[in-house]
Length: 150
Image 1 (cartoon, helix red, strand yellow):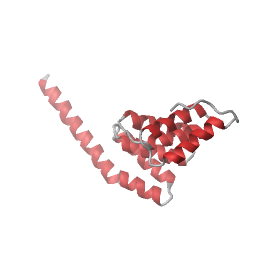
Image 2: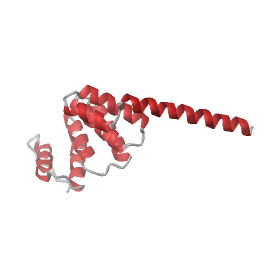
Image 3: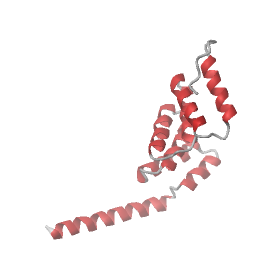
Image 4: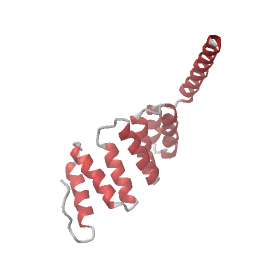
């Protein structure tokens, strides 16, 4: 029984090592994805970040960047899921909430968009005035101001 356990551990180590080697050779890194995004290859960047999220399942950074590319590619529901995953993994900045807010806004889910923008503002966004404008626009979009959730 002990030999079987050792054999299984060795086999898993080899398989995981080969998978990591193949991943490293594929060039799928955050910097590769960002370079593709910077060059305007949104779909290419999205593929790289999606591959990263499958290999580095606990990477908040990979999920946040994937969400950004999905947002740019107008895959709003997918972007929301990616941003939510990034937040659940510890992305405690504002970018995931801003991205979520924009995706919800494009899907017409104003309440969820507003909540995401309020959270981004509470976390200290670098553009509080623009976030406040979005919140105000959501609050008055029907011509009827609502009570702010500040």
